[in-house]
Picture 1 (tube, rainbow, N blue to C red):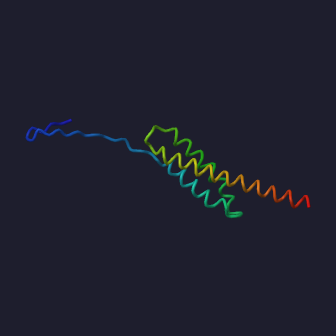
Picture 2: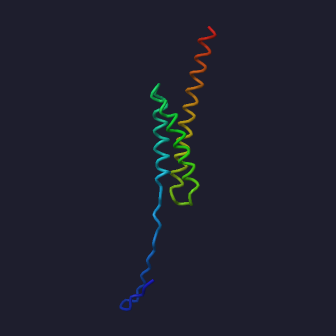
Picture 3: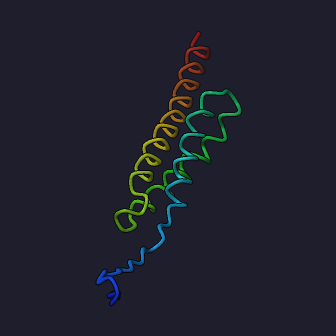
Length: 104
């Protein structure tokens, strides 16, 4: 803190630590992309890689100190979980279709 003798004003310098939100943003991007891609047949297999990776990155980013992209990390975890549920839904759907066609 420094006081200016001419005006009597006080200058306060605050140093803010840079926020590292790269993992949180990556989680959100991977989760949204997994949601978009999972519904496209055959191309949706990429979601099997993107969704778990986004989920892991989001969970790691959530463990960081508060204020460093925690909300974005939560959104990434939610989107990645929806993408992973979409992948599981495809497996169930294909399994159900296969069991119906074999039983006939």
